[in-house]
Image (cartoon, rainbow, N blue to C red; front, top):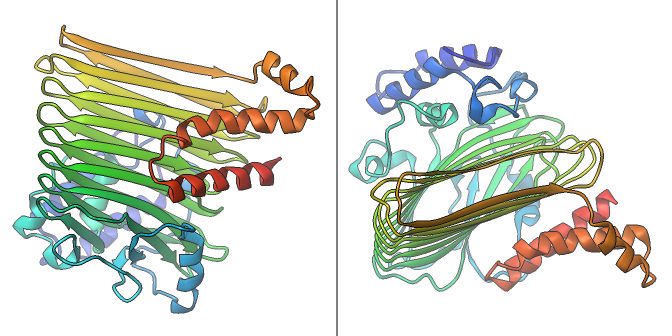
Length: 433
């Protein structure tokens, strides 16, 4: 083990894995756990975790078994994760387990949804699993341990007429370490919109979610993916999303991270696996209290004539801390690449912190690539302009912050989702002012 965080949880996980029977310890899981054991939980000595210490978030006596669901609180949790006015199919996942009774899905010819557990080890399952013997420790850990999850597939040529709202619910009476998994396959010429929200009911207990999502967007398919993170104190999330795009496909990801959870770590990796793909990544993070929000993105251009656009914005308040690390790799074969990356941050207190590192690595010569980053406070001239027109200082500050954030929110293509995000921003800004 190198650079590992020392925590009793590591020993607890090792004992739990060794106690599994032979049928559960298939080669995929054995390899994944060996990779996790070799690396352990990452420490600040690793470049990708340099500004995110996991020590305070892992120092809890977590229960590793899937929590017993309290049916009485499910409706309460669903209400917390709902989006007003959104006409959508509904897919409810409770502690990582598909709940068909609470779900409302389209006809099978437009969308296939399965529990992941029954298909583990089948070709349908392994076809979408990359090598997990190295790299991300949390992904390896999830591969070794996950028992619950969902498999969602959009058939060839299908156009899903309404968004698919995936509601993740977590309920537990004890502090829990939960590791759900989901696989999304969008087949050739298909078109779908996924919306993900989450809510947890856990009383005074702490809940840690180590989630892995794998998305495959096949030839000429389109996938729009919204991820709205509006969680509560005592919740810690590590999300790892791996996306593979095939020829002429289009993938758009919108990630909105709002105050509440103790820790939000989003890893978003995009592999452009063929020519003429189009990728759009938009992110907004509002950080307050003592929250830590960490966004790591990576886009790998491997083939010619692909386009990627990335724009993340952050507002950091009070004692909040934010990290943005965005990488764009352009391989030698990826000629005629068009890649744009931008990160903007607004600090609203002297104690707020942000660490930003946009990166380009280019090995091709016929490309058009640019990146940029800004970190600052209010423009005094803009503040003065509003105050000179009779607007109070605090109201003027609030207007400027909202204008800064809404620039990203306005890119949302679905009106109810856009309004939901706007209202969440209004609500959080009102609570924090």
